[in-house]
Length: 110
Image 1 (cartoon, rainbow, N blue to C red):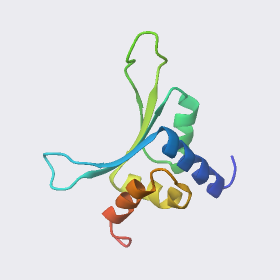
Image 2: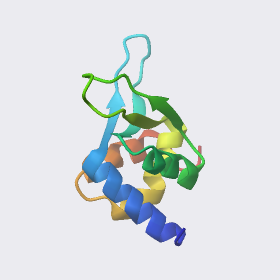
Image 3: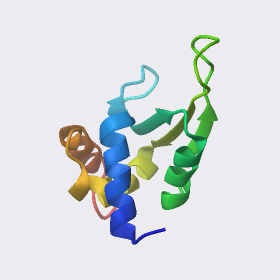
Image 4: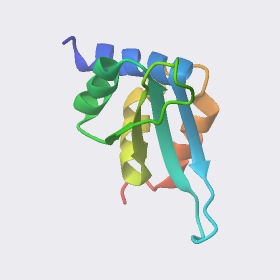
């Protein structure tokens, strides 16, 4: 593996291209849930994401159609999403506004 900065830049590219960044509103809570998700058919890349940050969970996704490849999802929420956002924010391009919302969700010293 390369340096941390290279890993974070690579991760930012994956999230920009294949990821979903949001604060999901839930009716049973007053506030939203900061969430970062990447779904793809490469289990190796999904485990790379989990291992790079030592955060998140991996889910096996249900096939949408029989002839589609199996996909996997890496998901981080709450403070884990904030931790990931803090590390990759300098490298993110396409989803920078959404990532900024996650960074503002928790005070820096909390």
